[in-house]
Length: 372
Image (cartoon, rainbow, N blue to C red):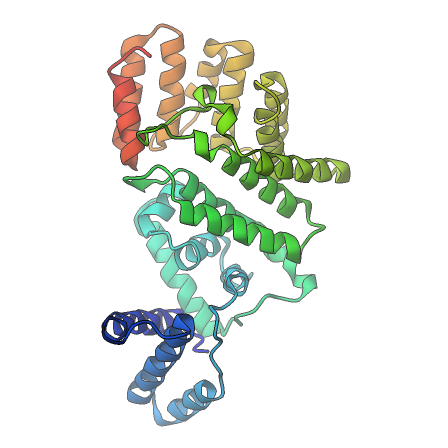
């Protein structure tokens, strides 16, 4: 309605503040979402009347008067594709969408993208200004324009899920709300674009990863690694659905990064153990398509299982990921397997210092003081 994300955010914040006061006295209305939307719309209209010039005031007031608020929250797919509009720079699309749609903080986005927090903040501000100044429409684009926006859209959904599955900060290791929202968006995208193999691959990846979540923490909320998990606690229905989607991708023979990651997770969830040779072959393909340091780090884990920790450590030492805590975790594990205990403990201490998650920090601090 407004064409200005900052104004929309402020109006909604004011509406929620008003709800805290009104609902405490009178109870929640029959349609809480409709109440919030209507109140936010009226607050925005009041602000435009106060601040805008006469011509703009009449134009904007007419626009808002002619708009009937929905009784349900807006479809998030529209916001997703708006934020991933090709008029925005590629470096701005993902952080803006993670901020508005994923609800991630600037610090969490910086952690996900491995860039400084100040850089993320600048990108978000510029992207909001671009949407306002260019009048970028709030809608899902026509079918012929969907493919050009697909890559950042998938990246956003994937990063929302990652933050949910392994929270970068806070007391809890897993944020159930983010995992559920990412999977919901993945299903919506799959319904919208059923023939896009990367959409299918991403959905399969999230389902197969989510299937292991019940076994990822112990009775006290502590972290449990994949190799130590009770596979009897995995969700067999999600595994079956994920495997079906992976088979559909394989039948189409158009491999992409998300499909390959899904295939890797399919191997992890197929049978009582992991076929590491097959995992390594899949990582070889993935590294060819997505030659990033993080993919190379994950591939090194598979190399350690196939060729031994010494070969894997050589690969890890060549990577430039000094502020990525997982890098130090992998390095510490390899050093420990090679009997280089003081170096391993120092690597785990470094990893503990870099993570903002309490569960991960506790786990890594324990590993830094023991030989296990």
